[in-house]
Length: 161
Image (cartoon, rainbow, N blue to C red; front, side, top):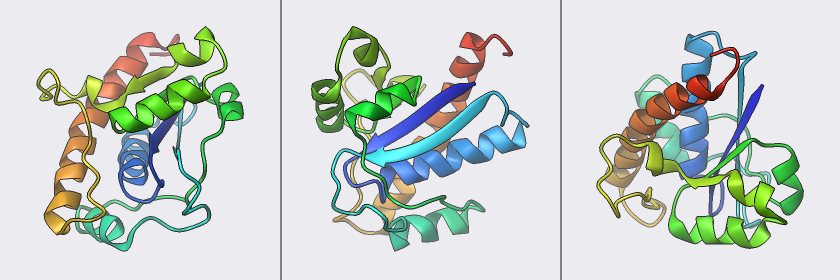
């Protein structure tokens, strides 16, 4: 089983969107016994909260649902996950500071490093929280594209792939 965690700041916009998109892809391909998906935030402000209403509305319009409630990523979570994917460089740096050793650090990557359309240096998922609905649409587009490419990568590295 490959265990993946998507991480953003508060775990209410970007990481739940990636979580929902990836969970849907895994379910469509009947890969629940190969890949498990979760999300968390580097900050604890929203722990227990549902995803942002605007993220949920964007997902619903596209036929998806966003799972779960916000969780806080801690150093102990490195024991639970094989891949820890940060939505931006700030969260990447926070995760690297939390990492206890090289094994933990090896699990961390920027999510959009898997995006086939990301140009060099354009590897962050922008935080849509303080913007309008177009920001949530952009994030969803990035998550759909990147999760599809990430799934291919995960299956290549899986013994069951």
